Length: 267
Ligand code: GLU
Image (cartoon, rainbow, N blue to C red):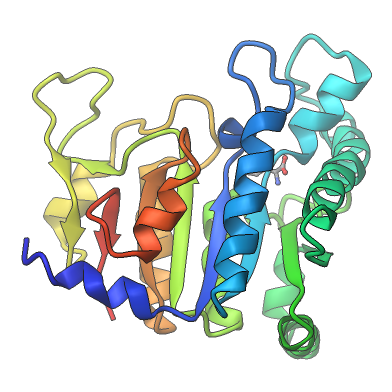
């Protein structure tokens, strides 16, 4: 890969960062990883301090609600999941707000369903709200409105939601933090010969076939949803990087043009 290709990433001004549940919770207990959240908040505020606009799409509502209730299992019933989300989303925001306020960084909660994107008026309202918040220097923290979303109005996963948000607000970069390093030629958990791909400049059938295997240990969106997110965001003018959120300082590397993660250079 041409070493200068990543330099493009240093000029990005409006960045959507998707944070998966696995990035902000402890693997073995499912409880929030406060050390990691603290670091994440510091890195995100520091990106803002560089004059860039930041929108966060954070998962974790259902997981946090489940922990708060002491449910020792992943609920299957929709109403239980929705109740967990109602409890967890408020807690999650409370933690984010507390941590961001240490740096005097204001945040806002934006909950969306597919209707928000599909209905013209609602879409325009959401766009105007995001624009207003970004002009105010606020970091919007977005999630699906899991408490009221129906199967038909469900984004399915936050990879798709974050790409739709990137498209809505005309972001120039979407970063998906997950529990995998990026795209591989095959599933690295089952094939030791799977090779890492650090650069993608087109989505063709070869690439799509690589995306078939399971690619995340416990998150919702697999590699297929990530590739579809790349397509949605590219169409709207945003490049995308998939990277491992186990060390959240990777966000700094990405915007400094360091060769980490998989860079979808599609715009
Ligand atoms: N919206 C869900 C939550 O916050 C997560 C969906 C996802 O991770 O893709 O719990």
